[in-house]
Length: 451
Image (cartoon, rainbow, N blue to C red):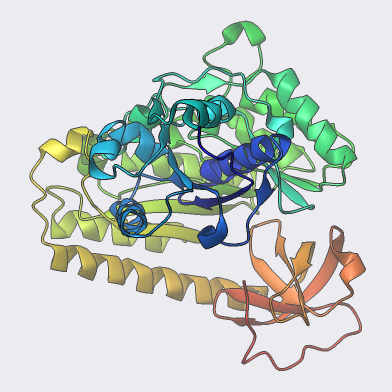
């Protein structure tokens, strides 16, 4: 029998859903009596909670696991969880024989029993169910922040975009019962949390798999808005097809719902969108943006963009460039296409040269930076509502975000953490706005460190 672990360390890669899964696993391990370690070198239990969306994230984990195999960690238990575990399953054991367990995205409730099984049998264990069963104890999550929290409302995705592994690593959509979500959010409010971010691969699909609940996404938002103490509600990620007028009206009418919508475009060419299986045309996307901005005039948008998708021509890339220029996204996550094993696009020739992909990527990044600079200039002199989240890394400033998701730092007292403050924007440093409370003047910020 192996020696039971006393300490643990979880390294998280990828999206906010992975971050929440890490918090839930950490809560399970704390309940089991383990203590978190400050670094992986001294941990008895080391978990890599992984992502397969981007090739870079996967290569980072592979490199780390390879280094561990060459190190002397005979007494440590090492496991892989998350999307990479689902994508590669038992093949990880063949490549990394020092691994003790592989747990997929739909099996994190099995972590406790898996560790016990390893201790008593010394066998490699893998659990990678294809479908998620809604049986997680979300209340056990160990959250680092005391101000804002992630709350899962739906897992999986049914859209099957041709470049994306999520439907294969997280399975079909499974909505969480509304009463469970409301109960968790009410408890978070009682504990002093001020902001919640609702998570799902496609939050807009919430409730469609369970019509008997008679509770779609905008209905759920209304229930959560009624919880006393919750000042702000955010959500991500959205699929444009499922963004409804009901949701737009909820953003307009519900006081706690922030006016920032992550609204992934992915490409500005209707032909490429069809090849991606995005289920909408460029024109349909533009019409939804127009309608959203008509109903919610102060709405700001975030997006995802992929450049260099198979067969994308120079002219089609220019369509994406012009779309970004016209729509003026407040936030944009832009990536060069990389083929992911198990997706339909993997079967196609990756025929856009890497040099062309990088050139297109840099052009969009430069455009977004230019648009961002213009947007930040428009904020100068304005008073904005800021939820104060924590002390900044420099120890002299507080940091927080506006309702439209802009990061801002300003001088203030630590007892303001967890409160809403009106802050005047007086400058910016890169993408971070610099502000001051009423009656205070901004100080020199050229060497400001923002995290």
